[in-house]
Length: 374
Image (cartoon, rainbow, N blue to C red; front, side, top):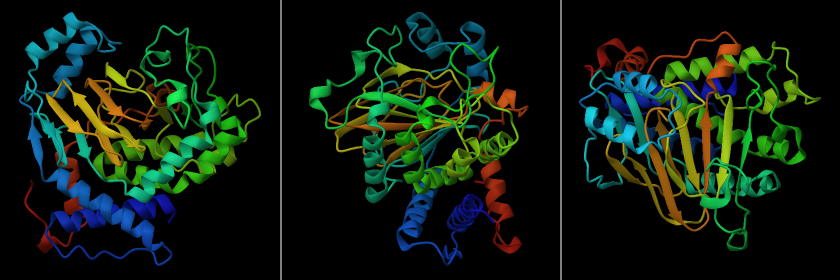
């Protein structure tokens, strides 16, 4: 069994045992380092705590997404008139948005999971390694001072002279379409992975990326399987790769996602992400020596503490979200490109569902130990 499959099996088995109120003793590969095992057990602890703390919406995320797609299929979240209409039709849980600090999930009225809040899921040693990785790729971090997009303009980035690691964004993918060329060009390896720094980062981030993928394997099993199939399909796809060694890159690509972006030293205004499908869950990890981190999710009416080591799983094309912090901070965003899945003839998976996770738990337990549906 490959390392990713071993990891996901352990996390799922451990999660199932904890949910079932068993003793939680699950066999693990003998070759695992103690620190890696501790990281895995911390991950399970936070996943279980979140899953047992459900917050329910009284509307359907499918209805919300359909309404949004009809009104504005490429909504960025910046149209105040549209957002006011959405909040009227789909009211948030709490208009005052009190700050939350404990793990939880948000579930719609049909049992779809639209958000996971996982504070402290990345241990200090792990997130510090991720922060050091930002320094490895800092030459690749870019700001376009002439861009009309807030994502690349300098408006929301810290001043370079205030930073130890320069501000900017870098995105990595073993295969994606150049912007505006999805209809005419083939998939290409991102330019960042055709650099010494990009390959160094990918090599050094393998363990962290393996753990990130393992988290997805628990919180959205269908998306994990689709991502795994997508990466496998790339081995046989014909790419215009500009000389990049795709097979070597895929050997290092320990993620069940088609892309990851590192946004360094940037405040993020309220927005939606448009590159993925409505049903896909993005994973956001925040790291760095900062303070006063907060994430605001106006669509569901929740604000959360966003300290270093926190991860949030979010249906980013549907839910508005924004972040802020004091000091230097990097966000790692892991995502699935809808047009890449389409190119590889893979269907976008369905919504993450409470019932799927309950079934996953039940399938991994002895018949007499199976719990009732949560």
